[in-house]
Length: 176
Image (cartoon, rainbow, N blue to C red; front, side, top):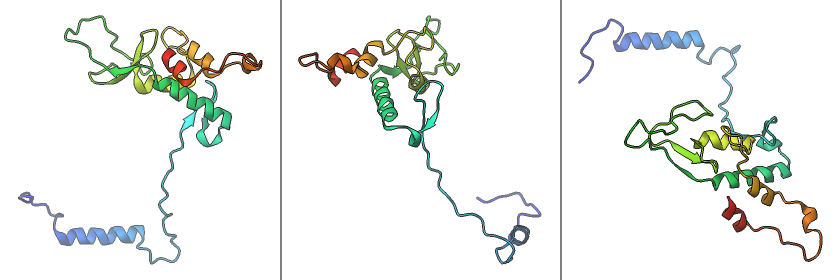
């Protein structure tokens, strides 16, 4: 059913007059001095990355070497175990109830990520943190100490003929 309440300004005529007065106050485009509104421009989202913890740059401003390092970080982060927060049946369990990065309580079903030191965080929070620093925000333990050494090896160690081969991706994944 329609609107049962009558209002003095809800009839079609008053709405038409309001519409015309609005157009007159904003201009109907016939005024030669009035410029048309700027065309709609879609905003292109360019991600911001942190090549070092103190620097923030747009993805388009990164060197190729920095892009490779960031891609490696993303790959390492994606191999950390993840899960869904479940506080358990008994709410009095001594479970972590708050993400120390965002200071928000965990809610049943929140996506979480586990670090090797067994601390847990919201997945988005820790992923963003690990893009800046490879340490746990709670205990400051290095998260990828062995894996980072394998991903960024010392080229001098492989300079000699017959030296050790560079680690394969499967070796890195087994350690991560």
